[in-house]
Length: 207
Length: 207
DNA sequence: GAGCTATGAATGAAGG
DNA sequence: CCTTCATTCATAGCTC
Image (cartoon, rainbow over all chains, first blue to last red; front, side):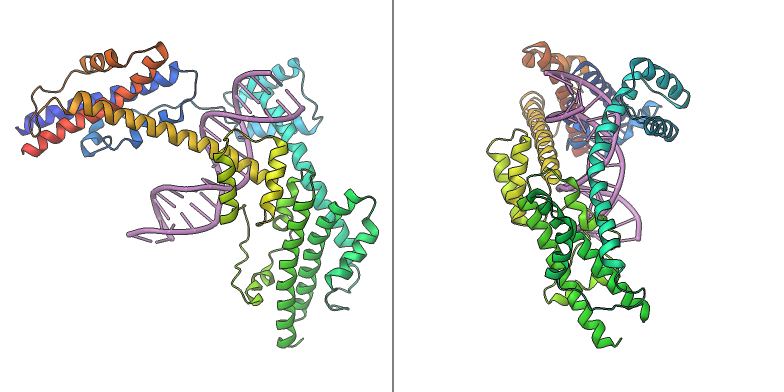
């Protein structure tokens, strides 16, 4: 086989490689079912991407497997969305969604469903986050009131409270019902961690 | 403060750090309240994980106190999760997640969110793996049956089938319904890639 | 210490 | 709204 024949073969292969990619795209655009294997069909095939297959540049254009993408808010869009969300986080009406969408369209590609979904998701997920923040606030306040204020800054007046005594002090202030007791046990273990670390830092500051 | 005192303090802190983790686990095993903050109590506490906390090796065993930026299942937990997954890999309900979480809490730090995420990820990734394997099996079988057996080894009896003809041969055997037709289009693009590469390799072997 | 893979987590989207 | 899925991001752990 002559070098010229090899050259022809390479061109042919390159051409077919592109056709394959186009077939993949066609498949993706036709099917309504998302098929994750689709994306990696060529990539994971041991027969593909052999040295010969890298010659797709023979076709003259660098074909870049376009992927169907989901909306990704730009930084500006996010900023605006969060601002609107903060000033009244009720679900916006249809009219409001329209307005917001046209506003955001100035800063990038967007559709009304994107806005709607964003508010739904953001609201639900902020709500969950709220639980975490509530918990952390409890820890911070408890440590502030019960632990930090007792020793003077920069020194340790009493060496490390035993954990039982520490919990006793915390629980005596916190217990309301059994449920609350259990919850406060968790808060207390955090508080005690904080307590220990602060005490240790105080030691360090003296050295 | 003498160095000896510091040493005692460090040991004490390390011991209490472990106690705190155990308290956390206890809390998780007792509560049925969905509390996503639980997992990140120590992690998100600004007072934790200060330099002094890295001295946990003082406890004698090399428990390296990973900073737990994200949950890492223990071997036992993984084993249980996979067992549960295998006996019915539908997404577990909220109640089920709670039960599983309590069960796993006996074997180490965990939160309901972790369990939920694990099932989501595991299910999705098993499914994807399955599809890829199915696809690759199809490609291998098709290439074996239709492509490789036709030319004799080391030579090419007919130069490169045009892709239309190739697809015609493949589809005539594969078509069952419209859905299957579409899917097999994708398989065929892979098969043709394989076909081309094998033919090309045959050429190369002769040189 | 720069890539690579596995995988925990975050997020856009869809359906009920 | 709530749940769930598909996809993407991020990083811990590994290899060279």
